[in-house]
Length: 265
Figure 1 (spheres, rainbow, N blue to C red):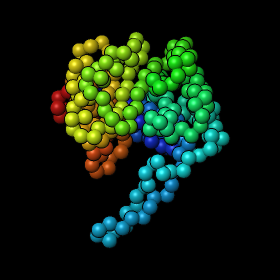
Figure 2: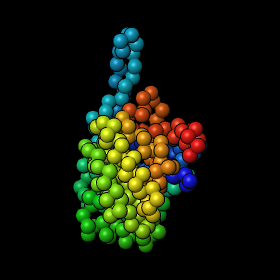
Figure 3: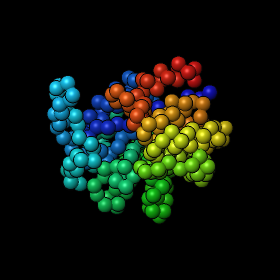
Figure 4: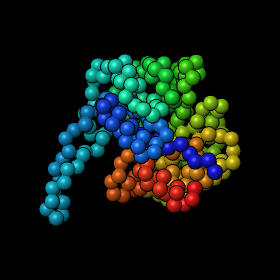
């Protein structure tokens, strides 16, 4: 069976941090990295000191939705794109995620579209274009990607629910077009939600569609762990290694590869 590509989603808030992560992802065995350009507008705070039940002090980062957001003028887009191109050795998926799909971009829609245009013309490997982008703008971006030989990931990020297996298979059938991979990332509220993603992948595994279906939350890692037998085109993994990572639906790159070896995928 074909082994899916592994994409490491970079979590840095500066280009240097992303470049360092990309180097570690390369060593860990990732095939490509996702540059979340919207994260460059986050300002990482100092961790809070928290005393646990044993009286020991731990340093805990506040939730990312509580982090300070930079002004648009604080990020030199052209310089950042040039630095990304020079400093990241792996193929790049370029993403500028809006807030209503779980991202951090602070500007107006047109400002985001202009950054996507610049990212595409910087000749990244792939670009993530949400299906929520207005049709006219999205068609323009698709044409621009095609003329620059940039692959397209058509994505939906639902931070509240997970559709049924039938709804997911219908989404893939509709949006997995020639030259485009369909990506869905939802949120599982229970194991029944997680099974919907596994069932949808199982139904699609012998099709010609290219897709990456996943979720956040306990059980959201199932479709990632069993991706090779579920026909997944790509798996998004993390460099994090904290305890109970699976509760978030995430999988560390090395753990993912070890799991595939253990299960003889």
